[in-house]
Structure formats: structure tokens, C-alpha cells
Image 1 (cartoon, helix red, strand yellow):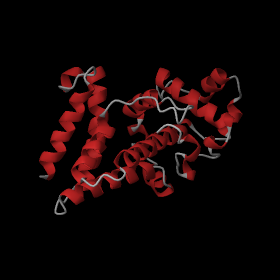
Image 2 (tube, helix red, strand yellow; image 1 turned 135 degrees about the vertical axis):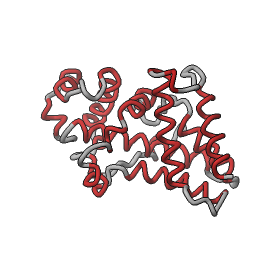
Image 3 (cartoon, rainbow, N blue to C red; image 1 turned 30 degrees about the vertical axis):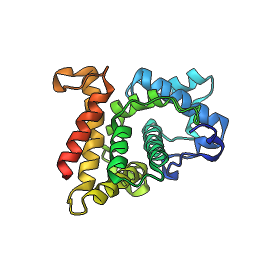
Length: 225
């Protein structure tokens, strides 16, 4: 992906922010520092006051970009899914085999994340930890239907649709492609979380990234066969 940064931008639906943080150095700095602070504190302990102190700025500056920490988390999660979609498209371009494309998609969903220097203001490794630990809080709310109509989850749904379409290439008669992809996506998060914090609930080791990829690849291909 090197040497492509000038031509790449990760698009997030406009409803998820008040001012696009990618449009300014200050906005990108907010994203950078919010990822590090959320990773350190968790959503409950995270506040805009603490973020402003960390950045040496004012809360008002942050509120110009995001109206709440829920909106900020929604932006970060949406950015993550758009970034995964970008990685999937890049990795599978000009690849004819749907089977190989599906294997790559599962690997991207469940494998180890490394820093992508095309986006230097985003620590993708820390962001994945946030997504694993916090992303369910984006949609497990009373406002989920309103947020959905406003496009908060468009990046996630678009990624799942892309992978669902690959499944239907392999087995056009399979009845539950969207259900399977969303199940695999959420399972990848839960298994990573369990391996770190509730190890008796999983056979996946946090130190062996290939185990989760192997488990989910086996699950998907046995289900659609």
C-alpha cells in the first residue's frame, strides 16, 4: 500500500461527525489522541475533558468535530470498517477465485492488524483493540434505529455486503450470507476479547493469531458447502 497515501482517503458517513476530522490537522490530532486515550481508559472513563487536557486544547475544540463521545466512538468504528474494506479491495483486486477472495476476507476480519503508515494519524493496532472491546456499544443503544437511518453503520454494512456477495459467488443457493458474515465479524471480536480476558470461554490463544483465522475459515466453508 506504500506510495498510495496521496490518493487514498477513508470515507466515513457525514452524519457521524459535525466537522470532518480528516479535513484539518487539528481534526486528525483529535482522532490520533482519542484512539490512544480510549485504548488506555476505555469508553466509560474517557471524557472530552481528559482528551482536551491530553492534547493541550479546549473541550470546545473537540465539540466542533463531535457532539458526544458516543459519536466519536461511532466515527472510529466506522473508520475501522471502511479501512478493512479498503484492505479487502486492495488485496483481492484482479483475483478471479471467489474461494481465495473469501479466505482473504476472513483473514482480514480475524487476523492480526499492523500499523498502516498510509494513515499516520491512526494507530490501527490500538483501534482494533477499541473495536473489539467497545464497538458493540455503538449500536446497543436506544437510539440505534435513528442512528441506522442516519448512516452510522453504513461502513460496517457495506463491508459485510461485499463479503456476502463473495459467499453467493461460491454458493448462489446459500440462504444466510448476511447472517453468516455478521456472525463471523462479531465472533472474531468476541473470541479476541475472550482470549485476553475470559480464556475459559475459548480455545483461541491470544499469542497465536492463526488459530482464530483457522477456526473461522473452517466454520464458514463448512457452513456454505
